[in-house]
Image (cartoon, rainbow, N blue to C red; front, side, top):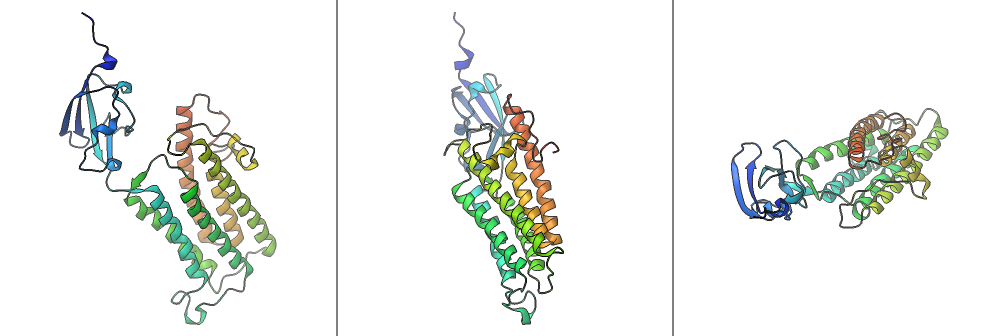
Length: 309
């Protein structure tokens, strides 16, 4: 008799709790061509559910099909509840709107910040006003990019992240703004020359960051999760792709270095350092995923700093 084609055999699927190994459900006669969306438990919304081949492994994608997974006729999947989820757009809008609003409170010296005699007064230093313009521009740009440019491969993230992210962005914005807009603030050591150089660095890096975001957007058609190798375009700001995998982070760090030089403010320098550390971790992770996914990935590229890191 003819043996059945294993690729077309109906499978049995058991789903266990990833922590307790308790059997949650058993599915009989599942077609091998089915994606994993069918296995989602209706008592939780799909975004908070994770199915894995190994209890501590990576989450499988909803579009993964049994036929292409390394499982036999009886497949064992492990379920993990990811907790309450929130959309990336909501997270970004919240964490970016906060610094914009908080910084302006200090800039306009609203009451109860610096003392009654300074309420609603204005700094006499040009660099203070310029710093407010740059800071506001940066976060308005981020808000607009979130709404109209970015395309997210994942629709949601854990709800707890919004509290962590907002503490970081809002806290540093208040710390920086307090000192830059303080009545006793002193301008940079080298005066106008230092400010002009720093402003040029800031503007160039902001343009570069936006250019990279547009280039990455064009790689992914709307509504898809397509991943491609990013390459330089006719836009000179994208030529940094020749040397690094994540030039958007390179430009982002450059912007804050420019802002730190412009204001000569220690909290800004610390914010730049912390941001650089975190973005380096992200860039290394993305660089590794590029190398793993694309065999023809350009060998000269580094994660974030050309030739170094």
